[in-house]
Amino acid sequence: MAKIIDGKIISAAVKDRVAKEVSKLKETSGVPGLAVIIVGEDPASKVYVANKKKACEQIGMLSVEYALPENTTNEELLALINELNNKKEINGILCQLPLPKHLDEELVINSILPEKDVDAFHPQNVGKIMTGDYDFLPCTPAGIMEMLKYENIEVEGKTCVVIGRSNIVGKPMSMLLLHKNGTVTICHSKTKNLKEVCLSADILVAAVGRPNFVTADMVKDGAVVIDVGINRLESGKLCGDVDFENVKEKAAYITPVPGGVGPMTIATLMQNTLTAFLKQNK
Ligand code: GUN
Image 1 (tube, protein in one colour):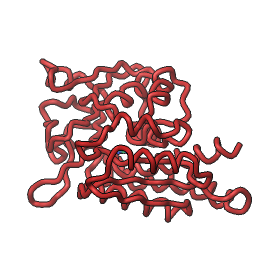
Image 2 (tube, helix red, strand yellow):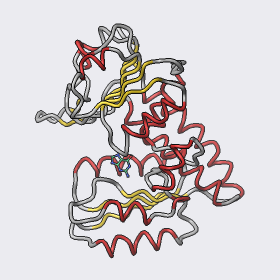
Image 3 (cartoon, helix red, strand yellow):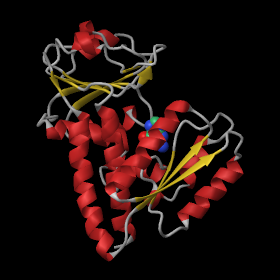
């Protein structure tokens, strides 16, 4: 039976650390500010944005939400980003993805000033992650690395398998595991022998977006299983990409959904906003 890695406890420790720094800053140079932009009515995005705002408030950071209508144009969105790029009290800008189909995601990401890009999605920040000389790390992969560190799980020399190759999770996750000297394989929808590759994993990260995709027969005894999926079933219940009930019997460590990786993403965002503030106010 696996040890359950509790994202609520670990994220609380990270947020506590950030809150202490923010409270010190309050007395001297002011507080970090995060602008969160959401376009349209995607219910999952609305929940994520509300959680980000709540975390800012808990920590004592300034948080400003811009909820734009579904029919917002590229020009309108870029004009808002330009305004926020120039606002001194805003240190971090996050545009919640996915955007409605008619908007140009790449153009939007590229228009955020790299030093305010707390998601680390701008090509300049992505490039820095490749070389290992980064200012910010993308929130979900960095949150996962924090979980591994908290549990004293060594990455060096381990066989790491990441399922999913998104720019938000799969690709940067692989890079962070590589920086820690893991031997990393990225799997995706065209991978032929997925089960065999997964069975080789000491550390298995599932970022697929399909409920219960990783089953117990794909997991090696004693593996560390990290579940990035947040899928809503027809019943309304949240579930991950991993068949938690059966996989927990084989794994040594496993993250639950909810209460696993999700809270870590938000904690890292708070850390990144603080980092942005400190760099901008050096
Ligand atoms: N959509 C899903 N995850 C994320 C994230 O980490 N940042 C942004 N901006 N959008 C997302």
